[in-house]
Length: 326
Ligand SMILES: [Zn+2]
Image 1 (tube, protein in one colour):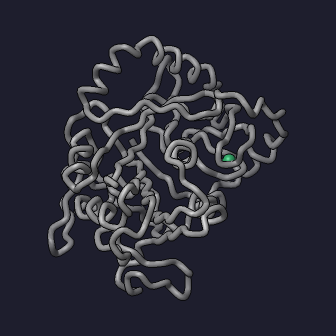
Image 2: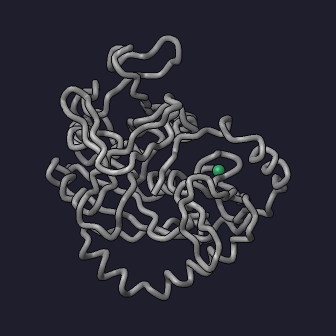
């Protein structure tokens, strides 16, 4: 699965901007009391849990698939109506075939649902909108919460920055700026997620979306996230994940001198501050949950979701939450 979370609206090609102009008619608001707008996830703490659940869900998965297939018109770009939680409004989500693979069903190419289904107003895609909703609706993030997010140049950072006074974001700028300092040119804070500059127990939430797969020593990153969380704090993150695998898939390694060895065809994801993209070292499997517990988290789970009313399409969309004991 290719994951590209960090393309901004400004970087979208002209054809998409004109698409939105053609499809910008307002949709009548739906009933705001409807529980169809509440995000319902199913939590799994192991591969065995997920496998048992899968066997009971075949009919539901078939119906989800049928709904998605009806949306495919053969057009390069199309829309699906739904409620955007971050915008708190009904919208026509935009879907195209950017980052899609070779998968076809009944002769129709399948979009990369995870990375698309984009709101025309906030610019957030499927998994980022779901993560925002989970953070606010399920995890109880409040305007006073202390939050660290490992990105600062993205529409998601802008969205959270407008709502949370105690939000800190950063980018990895390498050694051209001291870690913990702000680059005077770009205004971005420099942090390495394997060696954060924050004091122990600084944050209620640590948020990291499609970052850990780019960190050769991701164990150190998990450990740092644990360290900077307050007791009772939560790490909420997404990563490319293999639902059907107990183990992580290591795609590349890096030695102490920084030399990369590719074990598979290199996969690069979008990087907001590097046009060359960012190498993906891992696709994670269920062992990741055990690794989180080994770092000290008291619990760790994959939260799987699907919703046509919220525009959370695609089978087995997932996000992960690990909790530090009180
Ligand atoms: Zn939106």
